[in-house]
Image 1: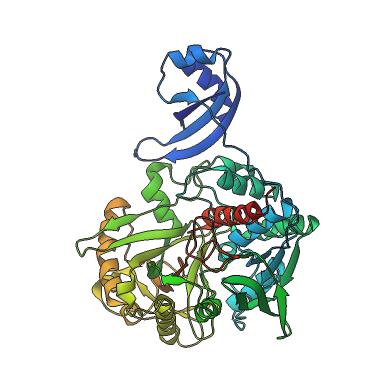
Image 2: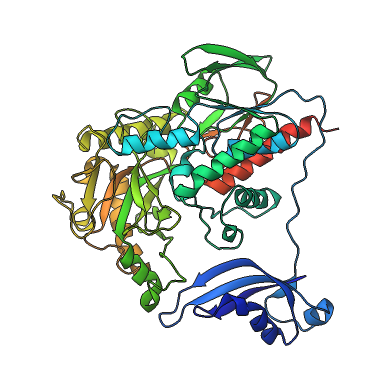
Length: 528
């Protein structure tokens, strides 16, 4: 097999013609043509291209390679993930069932290790009801919300699968397993794949079903409460169950796949002397535009073409004040969602369904925050600072989980907003019009004002006067890193910090891949 990259075809051309067009270009018959990657090139205002990477077969590979055609090379498929053969392995435990914990448990189960999965939240189908109840005005469930519960925080986002990490056997497994669990096959080749919140519930449940069928065990509404160690090695854990009873579970190996919002668990780890350190993260707001504005800005005259769907964007700017700002978790045709996990605090996030057919586009608009910005030398200082910002947003929103919001034009003029313009905020608990400078740190406000103008140069209309800023976005990544060595273990032997909450990932794919590697490290200890 060979591979060709950067193979451009007109937007209107039928994809069934790809083999014929490739044969015409190569001037030789081709067979078994497979799409490895598909992207959109909309840089020109007069033409939009579909850009493919294709694997294909020819009768004489060496003769074709000798012609040295641009972008043609031998095809090397990613290797399959091989599990070590283990015996006499004590039953491992996985804390958390977000992407890292879910895939760690899947690998352990496939190796015959019968993992126990502790999840402080509820199964995804029950969690979905709790989340939707809160969005409709009900009470916040601190243990079952956008942050806590089966599937992790990514379940109520867009299910984005873009990743900056190098694709390898672990990341390939993530994509393949999602497809096996019900995701559309297109995620295997689209340049910007997504699952959609509406599809993720079934996908997560299907993966759980396989883990259980292989001997795994899920204990929902069971929260890690304490660690018991002897001579620097983990020997047991204490667990708080749904009835507020505490029980002790002997363990030898724990994959600690916390989410980035497990603040009480971080405090317990600190008290127990588990080595951790503050980590840079980001703060900011959600910005909402009309989806039609984003479509026109990206696709120009081709906006609304049926083969394109809702446009997205990814922006980053370096500014004269020495800081940077960037967009994150862009949700085409989506909504801004209430994402609090603690009472008396307001947090925002973004979400899209698979169809991405809503009227608004939204994205996090963030500014990086270093430990020097949130002050203090305490390893948990970033987490405490997050809480302060979220409490300010709660107060500014009226203490009822409404979120403070401001039109872009008013934000740039440093004046409170009094009502919506063309963009109606989608935040389900309602917004309180205000000046976001009362809830955001001054360096973030100054940086975001500079960034809006610079981003507008890259994406015309980005600083649209009626675009809405909704605060605050504080949970884009973990403010903490749990230290670990090359063997994936904490200095506390037997503890394997993994995923986004531990500070080693930044999205669904990277967190899942980190969980896979942590599980492999556990298995390797017992490999024959």
